[in-house]
Length: 132
Image 1 (cartoon, rainbow, N blue to C red):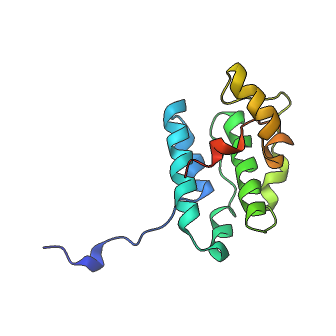
Image 2 (image 1 turned 60 degrees about the horizontal axis):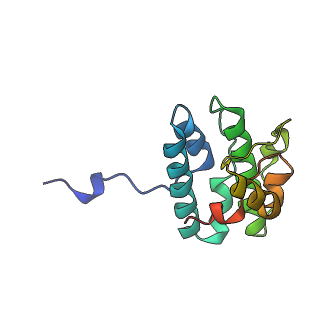
């Protein structure tokens, strides 16, 4: 019988670790990982959430997702009344990206994308980020 002290302590997913997991994953898995991150983030105390965003993720191999992570970190920090981590400032797209690229999703994203996403060229509607 294993001693319960042998178990690793639970650590919530950080944006740095999320970036590692997104690398090489297909689109469906990427969105599931984002949803998992958002769920874990939501359950952390507000005062400790900023540490989940603090460390810059390594490149995922896809510039769109690298910029998405920066926008997500800034958006979540602002929602919690915190300043964005400094690493987010270097990431933006030259061409708009619509992760959900149907006509209806594009219109919804143009109207409802949070500011942190819009200013980086990532157009995703806010409700897509409320999966958790």
